[in-house]
Image 1 (cartoon, rainbow, N blue to C red):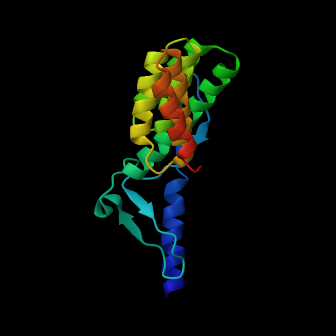
Image 2 (cartoon, rainbow, N blue to C red; image 1 turned 45 degrees about the vertical axis):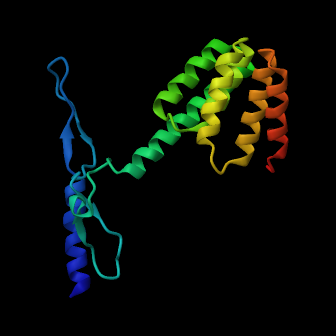
Length: 183
């Protein structure tokens, strides 16, 4: 009985997925129907084949399709990683202004990502803007909790920024802090 019920529900589900929709007609001519699987945004199919197929409305789970915080964070992270890679490419080519714009875009997407602040600081150092680099290092350090490797990089970059501003003693202190970190 369960098997028959499972087959019936599966057939109905698959029948709903195979509807065809006609593409918009441009220029008045007839166009072939285009296969486009359609899924109802309000439902999600569970993959438990031993007990049959159950369908749960996403609102019961406290989510709306595509709007869970985890999905947003994942999508944001993918975008930021791509922008960081683009900025690195610009940096290799010594195109610091383009790298800076790309990193600022990544910063707008994910303002709590400390790696962005490190990369921006390096970009500003290479554009002879040590004061901005120092501030970016400070912000990155405030966000880099638990990431010893990045903290070490940020302290080293801050030492370079301070040295470029003529603050030799502060630069040496920052460098000592960088060397103390076990990364």
